[in-house]
Length: 391
Image 1 (cartoon, rainbow, N blue to C red):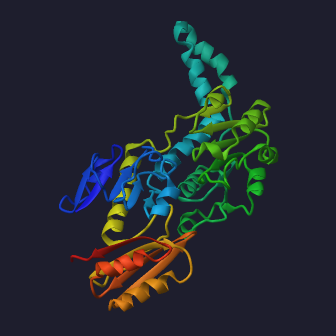
Image 2 (image 1 turned 180 degrees about the vertical axis):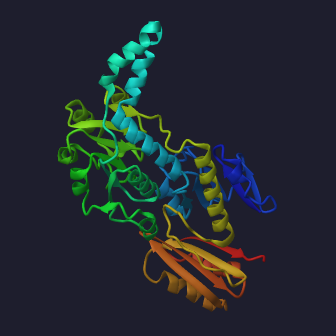
Image 3 (image 1 turned 135 degrees about the vertical axis):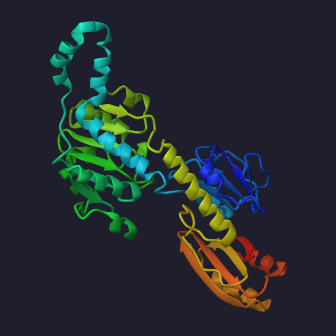
C-alpha cells in the first residue's frame, strides 16, 4: 500500500485515479511515500524520511526545496503543459490588453455611471483617448518555445501576426508542433529589435533572472509592448517602469503585480491568473498523479525537475532502483555487488542529469537485504529501493 499526503486541495479528477486497493490518500498521513502539492510552501516543512517523491500539480516549483530533495534522493515532478492552454489564452488576452487600452477605457466608462442621459455623448467624445493599434500585421517575438510558447506563437500567427520565436534549447516535440509560419530568431537581441510585442515563456533561473533590462529595452522599437505571464523576475522591474515612464515602451502586461507596478499607469497587472481555470487544475492534477503512480509502481521518471528522464519496460519480476551522485564507476560497483550475491541482471538502464544519476536494474532473483545494504554503503549512493512486479 502506497501512502500519499496531499498538501493542498487537489482536483478529484486526479485523486480518483489512485486505486483504493493500492493507495491511501489523505492530508494527514504520517510517513508518506509521496507528497502531492500545489502552492503550499515546503521550504520550512519537515519532509519525513519515507518520502520518495513530490509531485507539484503545476509547472512552477519555487515552493519546493529542490537541492535538499536532490541530496536526499527525493524525485520532484512538475506538470509542464498541463496549464498550457490556460496560460496561452491569457497571453492572447494580454496582447489585446497591451494594445487597445481596454482596461483604462472600461474604468473611465464606469466613472460615467452618474451622468444619466449624457453617457452616450460623453462616450463618443472621450473614446479617442483610449484608441490603440490592432494586432494583425504586427510582429510578435516569443521568447521560450516550450508547451505554452508554441501555442502562443501558433495562435498569434492565426490572428495574422508576424511571429518570431527564440529558444536555443527547443525540444524536438516543440519543434514538430510549431507552425511553419513562425520565423526563427538566431539571437534574443535580433528578436527584440524586430518585435512590436514580446511574450516571455521561460523559467526563472540564475541565467534568466533580469533577462529584459534597460540595455535590452534600448534595443527594442519605440512603443513596443511586453507580455510576462511566466515569472516576474524575468524582467528588471525598475528598468521597465523607467522605460514605460519615458515612453520608450508602450505597455507591460504581467501576471505578477507589485506595489510599484500597480502605481505605473502603463502597466497592466493581472492577479496571477495564468493557470486559474478549472480545466488547468484538473489537467495538472491528472498529470501529477499519473507521474507519481508510474514512479512508485515501476520506477519510471518523466517530467522531473531534479533527476533524469528514465524508463525501462519491465520484463522481470524484480526491479532495483538506485539514485546516486554522477561519479565514475557507480554502475560497475552496483553490478559487482549483485554478481557477488548471485543475482543475475536481465536488463538495466542508467541516465544522469547534472550531479545526479538514476539506475533501473531488472533481476531474475529477489535482492536480499544484505545486498541492498552493501549497495547503500557505497560512497555516492543516495537512495535504494526495490519493486516487485505483481502481475
